[in-house]
Structure formats: structure tokens, C-alpha cells
Amino acid sequence: MSHRIPPSVQHQLGFYVYLYVDPRDDSVFYIGKGKGGRVLSHLKDRSESEKVERIAELTKLGIEPRIEILRYGLTQDEAFHVEAAAIELLGIDALTNRVQGHSFDLKRRARLEDLTQELDAKEVEIIHPSILINISQMYRYGMTAIELYDATRKSWVVGPRRNGVQFAMAIYRGIIREVYEIAAWLPAGSTMTVFGTTSNVAESEPQSAPEESQRFEFVGRVADERIRRRYVGRSVRNYFAIGSQNPIKYAP
Image 1: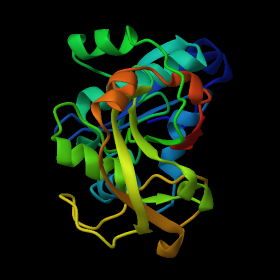
Image 2: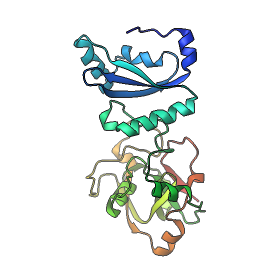
Image 3: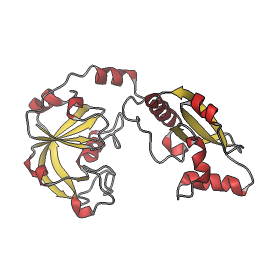
């Protein structure tokens, strides 16, 4: 395999999405996007990752991964979406990718009936003191009421402002999935859940390995029907900045 892409070819490729394939069984084990020589950079990667381990395993056997271009001549945004769609189709568990993809939660795979409801959802103005919690990493269609409650309530890096809110709203794809009336905030991991006591990976502000003492979870109950009728199923996309990685938003 040539470990060099001529400049003229790089120019014609533009942004592209590529695959690393294990030639022993033709299985795709990594999906990426990029431009220029990005596709070859993994062959020189010496970091600790499952992807690097797979390439090293093949190298020891005297073989190289087969590199394929899935789509090329794309804009950067198109490459983001193609990458995310390919990862979701194959499943993150079948790959060595660490994350789902840049555009994973923007226009991801969904049942038509669910997508219709989401795209047709009307925006709502939040008038009650609330904390909006984006649970995109935990949410799945068809989850039980208690699973949704646990996914929403724990555990987050939140400051003193948490004590001034009355309701917590579970947000997925910009839609309010449920509203809870908060009874109290407690240190993370201090209450039992159907998921155990493991903390959510998302945080309210960028930090590296925050102390558990910085994390909190709430306990409460589903809000009364008057509150639910106003909010559940309504859109709050206007409350979250495009591209924001922060799962926490206070309102109003």
C-alpha cells in the first residue's frame, strides 16, 4: 500500500469519508472523515486505542488494513453527516471508533412516526424556573418511565444555580420528553437507580475528570398534568446554541 496521496488526487478527493477494513474477514473496524492525507494518518498513530491495537495486530501478521473511500468530493458538513450515518448503520459497538460522529445527534436514524412528531413539534416558552438536561447519550426510544427518570436526574456537574430551579426537563433532539418536579439535589451516586450508581459521562461545562464531589443528582417526581400539558412534546431547540456541547441549560 502506498502511504502517500499525490496532491492532485487530494484536490479531487476534497472532503471524504473513509473505512478501515480488516482483510481477514472484510469487516469494517473504523470509519473516519477528512481531507488531504488524513486517511493515512492512522497508520502512524501510536496512541493507546482499540483502533491502533487492531492495526498493530494486522501488522504483526504481515498484513495491512484495507483502506476504502466511502464517499468523496463532499463539503465538510456532508462528510460529517455521511460519517455519522455510516457509524450508526454499522453500530458503534462493531467499530473501534470512540465516538458516534460529529453530526450524530443532529439528523440521526429514527422511526418515521417519531421523526414526524419531532419535526412537527411547536416551540414553547419556558416560564417556570427549570433546568433543561440534554440526555442524548442515554436516551433511546421505548425506554421505560423509570429509565427516563434515572437518565435525566443523574449525574451532572452543576453549580449553586441548581437550587433555584423547580423543574427538570428531559431533552432529546430538542424535544421535551418529560418534566420532573425537583424535591432535592444530592451528591452524585448517593441514590440507587436502574442503571446502578454509575455517573453519566456528560457534564454541564468542559472539564477533565471532575471530582465526584462536583457532581449532583436530583430526586423528585413527574410534574403534575398542568405542567406536562404545557411542555411535554414541545420544542426547545431555540434554547440550545447550534453545536453546543453543554447538556445543561437554565430557563427562563
